Image (cartoon, rainbow, N blue to C red):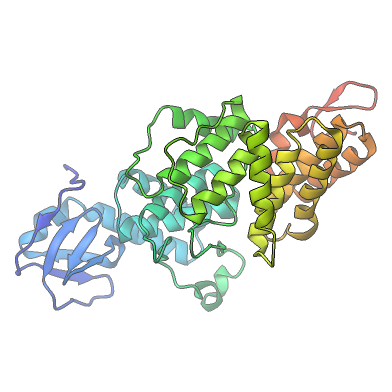
Length: 373
């Protein structure tokens, strides 16, 4: 069956749509595409549509399987079957690549929430970008799920993947532009080299910045922000974080000054965790031992104060602090912090980082992540 992607079939007034709840909107169907069904001027997500009859029956038949899959994603996600929802959503989002609208928004949101819940940073970042593409200035990340879903369904009380979303920028607190050189990030960088993101995407600035940050950690490639539109505060914040780590010495210092301004007043917890992580990791790039020690102090704010809300960053902060202290000659302090990382974050990706994994034993030999310091 030939799949119709992107072709919208313009309407007459004879087509009839039946929704999953059995209702039939009185307005005529105006268009049918894999992005949704337009009824009475409003786009309806495919997961809500059961069938379309009349003059749009044929084009509907060619996307009906996508509608069924979208409905299955919602059903499995809302009943707490996150693994089942992820399998279907992943395949469907690939089929919807480059599209916009409420169907993409629902699938991408579900996939992002599931991936954040299981700790897949690169996977969640990809689906978040697709979700962000479906938003606008007034609603950066349109949500397709009731915010009180978990409280209404007891089965979801410990499964519902909650997200802290910045309403103005669309940034997710769980997805900072902060990476370490581990296999999953290396693979993501390689995948980006094989594809070229469209500059027309709403998420283009974010994608370029996040990928530049990851590539720097993997192979040290200098960051080039030429041509980026940084008028909006979200991309500007991300750019400051990236430059503070990956820029030249003077640019790093200037970025740290801008980030310090963001700590004035009472910033939200997620923002303070991002900023302190960024400043600390930036200071670790300097040669002055005293500056590097101050960087460790900035980093240790994160596990001490924000570990429950920013578990990923807390683990990064512990890993980077342990390695920095080891290099600064504080072996005892380094061992304590590394042990805390291994004890409190046994599944953290930082345990795959060479700076933590290849740990020297007391007699000078390298030890594994599970070895005795």
